[in-house]
Image 1: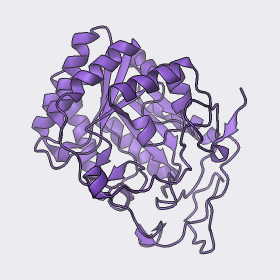
Image 2 (image 1 turned 60 degrees about the vertical axis):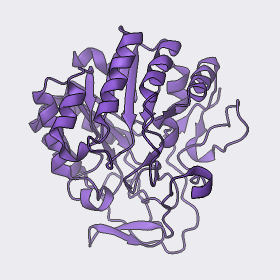
Image 3 (image 1 turned 90 degrees about the vertical axis):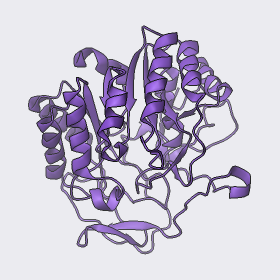
Image 4 (image 1 turned 90 degrees about the horizontal axis):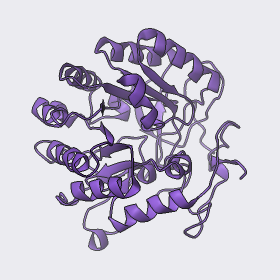
Length: 363
C-alpha cells in the first residue's frame, strides 16, 4: 500500500481507499433547516489572523512558512488554492475489514465520531486498529472555534438512548479502551455532564474491562458538572487547551484560557489522571507553546498531545506555519523533563492518537 500526501486524496464511492473525506476537502454544504431542523452557521468570508491586532479579520488566506523561526502571518490577496503540504504529511489510505466493521457499527447504531467530523488525518490508521473516538450529543456544536470543522448551529434534542448505543458499540467492537468526547452544549444547564456520566456507566456495565477516556468541554466553569463526570472515575479526564493564552480570545472566543487551566486543576484535585492537547501553527510562537506546557504542569496535568494545525476548509483560519518534525521531538523531550508522564508530539498527532497507549504510563 503506497503512502499518499493528504492534499492529493479525494473522495469517491463508499468502501474504497478513496472513500473518506480528509482535512483539505471543502466543508459539506449546509442543509436547510427544513431538511435538518437546526440552523447551520457558515462564514461568508475567509478569515485571517492579524498579528498586529491579535484578532481575526476578514481577508484572503495567508502565506505560510515551514521554517523553524516564528513568522508573522503575511497577507496573500491573490491566493485561490492552498499550497501543498510539506513532504512529511503522508498517510496510508486503506480501508480494511476492521475499518469497515467499525464504520458499519457506527452507522448501524447511528453514532458519530470526532474522527469524521473533525476530518482527522489518522482515521485510516486508527480505524484499522479498531480504535475511534465517539462523539456524543450529535454533530452540531453551540460554539464556533476558527480551527474546527465541526458544524456550528442550533443543536438537536438530547438523545437519551445514545449512552446505551455507545456502550453497545464498544461491546460489539471488543474495544479495550474507549474515548468519548462531545460537541459543546452550552444551552444545557450542566453542559452535558449527566450524559457523559451515563455513557461511562453504560459502557462499564457492558464492557467492565474496557478503560475509558473522556474528552470534555469546559462546562463554562461549572464545578458541579465536572464533579458529576469525575465521580464515574474515567481512567483519563481530558480537556484540550488547544492554543496559547494570547490567541485564545480570537480563536476560541467562547472559551477562556485560565478557565480551562483551572478545570484541569480541579479535575486533578478530584483524583483524575488529566490530559490536554495543544495545536501548533495558528500564529503562536514556540515560546508561547512552552508557556502552555508550563501552565499545564502548574496544575499537575499528566499527559499532553501536541500536533500541527491543518486548515479544514478555506473558510477556516489559515495555517500560519508548518513546524518541522524535529521541533515536535524537541517539545516532547522538554515535556517529559517538565514532568508529563506521557507526551504524544508530532505533525499528525491529534488528541486521541495512541490514546490506548497512554493508559499504562499514566497509571
